[in-house]
Amino acid sequence: MSETEVTTAPRPLLLTDGRPAARAWSLDPALKHLNHGSFGAVPLVAQERQELLRVEMERSPVVWFPALPQRIAATRVQLAAFLHVTADGLALVPNASAGASVVYAALSRRRGGEIVVTDHGYGAVTMGAERLARRWGGRVRTARVPLDADEDQAYEAVVAEIGQATDLVVVDQITSATARRMPVERIGAEARRRGIPVLVDGAHAPGLLAAPLADATYDFWVGNLHKWGCAPRGTAALVARGPLRDRLHPLIDSWGAADPYPDRFDQQGTIDATAYLAAPTALDFVDRTWGWPTARRYMNDMADYGAHVIGTAFAELTGTDCRVDVGLPVPGMRLVRLPEGLAPSRVEADALRDRVARELGVEAAFTSFGGTGYLRLSAHVYNTSADYEYFAEECVPALGEWARTAHEQHRAP
Ligand SMILES: Cc1ncc(COP(=O)(O)O)c(C=O)c1O
Image 1 (tube, rainbow, N blue to C red):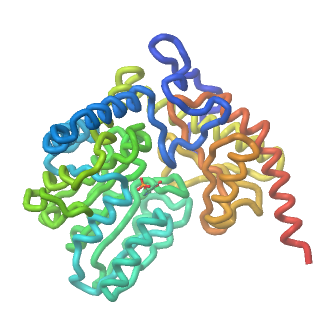
Image 2 (cartoon, rainbow, N blue to C red; image 1 turned 60 degrees about the horizontal axis):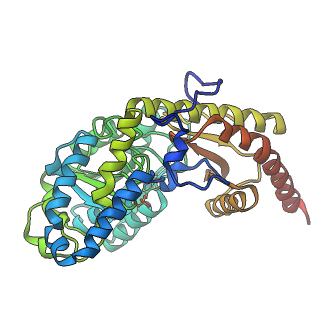
Image 3 (cartoon, protein in one colour; image 1 turned 90 degrees about the vertical axis):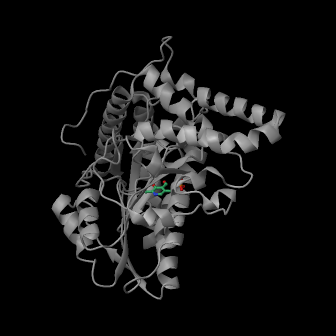
């Protein structure tokens, strides 16, 4: 829920030739796509650019591969400009998970081997932290941050877990299951003041925030360009600063190993790096067509409108308020509380996602936090108010029915 809830349908964004924005994507028109946030969606121009690059690679691999590091380095400069950072701190990695793995592989235990994470952390990144803590003979300490925690409460909850034994703090800039911000600037500043490295998981930040690293204090930051930036998958940035960055190596050892950070990431054995090279085409497309500030405002208003329409439909069905206060909201993403019995765990939330896609023709994200299930909306420029109105009219009654069935099964002896 944002402070100024949008209750009227935003006017759809159009392409420069007047066609609906969705025509610039290859998303199946027979489905509704309400979950840009999980895997992104690549505009046709960027798909075509990647395909051209692949053709070039296949025509002359022996020319292509030796020249690749230089092309990746040039691409880094463009992507760094989008993120408002300097290219000498930015390495390209396939995805945010890989970026976290690179950081985990580089650090060593100096104190008690404890890693501080939060209960909003992305599962795969947290599992990596758990594995590292086990290797160190330490453990993960999980800060419990209430869903509606404000900045001070979230900060206090995380800092309370940092102690003499802490060797690393991992905190999300924008959380996945709960679509909220964490005060990464203050948490990072406190950890760094105590000499503890900080990894900020900014997977959702590029594209969603105008200058994603401006309000983060970090030693390491990872962010996906294939989510809100619409770059071909997998394209992600790892940004590092301070003395520890020289310890970072790509997950794949390569001939670039002797090069300094981040140049050594420009070589990764023989891989298809066309996604990296085509990423600027996606960013430029949104920029040239609408401008990122307009796109961001639209995404935010659309998510707000969607939450209003769907939340109202659920409220009418269940008689309870389904709006959710996430404490520090993010642009473009909203949560709507599901009727009791739906998605009480991550496994059930994933099963619900699959069933809704299969039976109702809607790609949506369902998440679970603290035993409660949520619909997580994430809107992009190709979404229109009709998407959310469809969900409210067609999916909400079905979900209400499924919740009733789940409830009855639960009560059956
Ligand atoms: C907060 C967060 N971290 C990490 C990831 C992992 O991203 P990827 O699968 O691209 O590695 C995600 C993906 O949704 C995420 O939301």
